[in-house]
Image 1 (cartoon, rainbow over the protein chains, first blue to last red):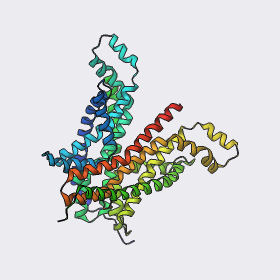
Image 2: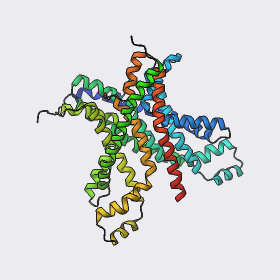
Image 3: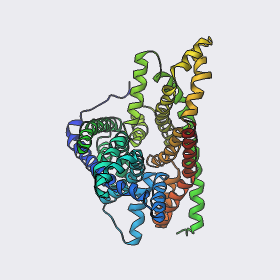
Image 4: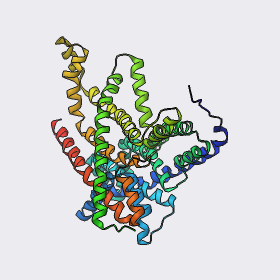
Length: 222
Length: 216
């Protein structure tokens, strides 16, 4: 065999990989929180009585879902400065990821809201709860419980897709991998190790969400 | 300096879109063939074969496509395999598509009632004939909507191959942008082209979903 695998560089590189992974985790955390909050508004707006609002949300969802994330990212990072909106790479990445995530989760949250039987709303209203409290205390927790698996999958897909933001020089996991392989000339080993780190992150994230999220949502229903 | 008019930009982008379409088609076809093989392993009666397929699917669904492309394009030459950008692009997308399609179709196979298998074997068909004549046609029919949905995802994923240097829509748009300094127009048009490619397919999945919902 002409090529011997060498993982000797790994010792000095753990810091860089950890820093990159921390950035990836930071990005997906911000995106998840912002995306879910926005998509609750989005899903509610899509079911509102104003046709313009419904159309606008529908158009946004279709536009995002039918174009690649990479193009959305380039559009925001390279295209917006023409209007004087110059964003820091990390901010541009967070914005692009949140906009992308919200389009998908709006549909998911919406499906959850539709799955809650109307009797639940009527029963809560009969108890004299104001309508915003009915939504927060009765409808939303049940909807979130139904859509929890779909939401988890979407968060993991977004985490994996965040590797693309390395292209606008956000120093996350993929960016650090590029830097490392340029320094060590060990492309195969570097990308192999980083791929395994991503695999660990997606498995870990799924476990974490299922361990904590389920209980938190179920607890909120009481 | 060469002057680019709006129509020059659009013409060049449309020419580049051919490669996006070709890559999507080839990867989808290759992914479907490999996906059937993975599917057969995934529903095999032997436990360890099922396990292998499960790990294969988990690996491709649990890691970024960009890393898979990097491993193929930058990693393989280190191990002594010469690989061009287009080979890495086709190979990477095909492997990834096979994992996703196998998982989608497995859902279809497993949603069929056991009676279908029993009836097939009571007709004296052997395993391959059962699959070919009874099981797979029904599984494909049930999962047509998610399969087309995955095709949309695949078309969007081809954008990533620009990063390893495959000359498709996004790669061309980067070059045009560097020459014209009009990122807003260029990336706006690119988004529009992708939208025109993907939206009809998305609408088609909606129609298919409604049709399936009506049948049940």
